Image: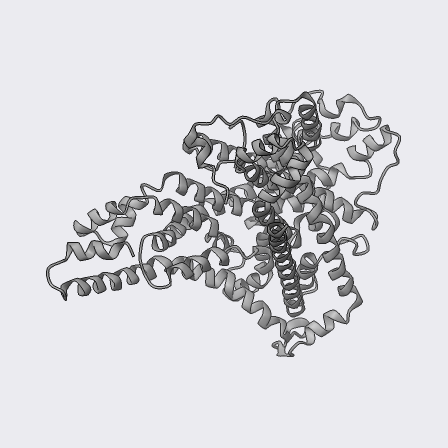
Length: 317
Length: 292
């Protein structure tokens, strides 16, 4: 430690006095550290850790309708019930599919926007701000705008009509609703993720690009051999953060479709909410929350592993 | 790791390669893409300022009137603010203000401990704080709301405030800033006999500057946008926050589109104005924009 020689010099009178003063100071610092960390520590234990553990504990119990009797310990009965229910299986599949499709698409769009926005453009700052504007609107506001825009008599259908394309049942058909929710989530999210990728691209030293230019590499080669490999870190961050955001997506589903039509937009997060509150089965709802968290963690771990693996491969090749 | 230092040391001007010079084609693409992103916002803004019955009358047949109102009116805003939304807006602001006041102090105290004080396990404590607060809140909101029922905190302002006061990013942000304050300040104060709370209160807090403002903003934005949590812990309509009030009005009488638009505009404008002021006066919260 750097601090040790300093105290030695300052208190260099007796060989015993130094360590004792040091130890007293240490004790005092520890005391104040505990005091200063206490509020944040209490907040983290009661607001984050307790509910996470509590959810698991609750999921191991079975409640009784009406709540007249206390829930009884039932082991993994709730989980068995969930995975033997075809409706829940469909919800899990839908949630996984939603994320498998949506996350790469959103990141790809964000990456394309970031590349465009780091080119030399006229009024570049203005375009960047405009792309970021949807991200600044609270999701309740965006859901309202799109909810009205996608009505059967709304502007989207009016435009489709004027172009001679057929009107679409955006939110009212079980074949369209999920794609419509994806559209809203993408409009809301990509401008935000773009910002991280822009700063990632701008952090790449110009020398690399100059070297590529000397090698007469075209824009596409330069992108795949310099920009993309150098962007691995921000890409991983954005992908993981986007995955988490999409797994817990709730507001547009609650406001625009309510999980319907015919459960076509019922995702795990919304299902857990509905089970806990609409159907008042908090034990089964807790089990759904645990399943959601586990699937989300598997996705995040897979993304880490995938991009790490790539890094190694890149180094060898 | 990418090291940008050599370029600046050598004083080499940052020049873009030839293919990246300003191109009208790329600008044209940018304009088109931006339109897709901005038109819905524009439609929202115009819709909040036009007579309510005009929102749909411009659609069939589709006319240029879709984005040009025949007259500008504030009746949507007036009607909205006089209704339950006005009250909900006050509740929202109150929750945000209390959260920012309590949360900024809580985060600054924790940041001071992990940045300045030396104690065993400091690194682990720091990691637990940052990672712990990054657990997606939505995933634990439902179980947490059941704990809150047990603690008697449903339908209270405190119940709305509590989950928003701890913020991992705010602690991280403040710790980085506190690390940059010279240790000699603290040593000098200690020689004068100042205690740790005194050092925190009269040196580190006043020097917090932009980092404190950023942390306050993070806490504010987190609370301002919260929807699921208030939905779970508040059933009393008089204590409902603005986003939930707006969504409930949207679900109930779907004919008042002008007012729904006005509500969305208000919800968006308040944080935007706040961020703008903060950015102007403290230079904080850098969003990547503009030329280098």
